[in-house]
Image: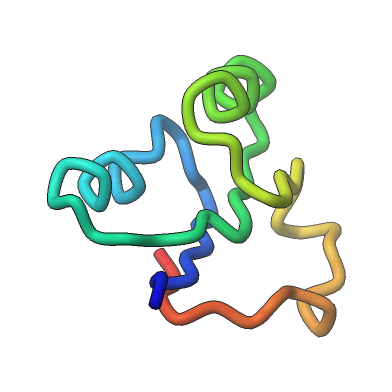
Length: 70
């Protein structure tokens, strides 16, 4: 069973890297980051299922189910 994880204000994705380092099986369901360059880094290094650009403009009622929110 994989932990389903979502992050907001994702930045450098420290929580996702920590899960990797701890060898905890997880699915990176979504990330959200406003900074263009941070989004590029997230896509290059972590590949979340969904990458939101702005926490203030997305429909929160439609967020996927997750086990851990950071």
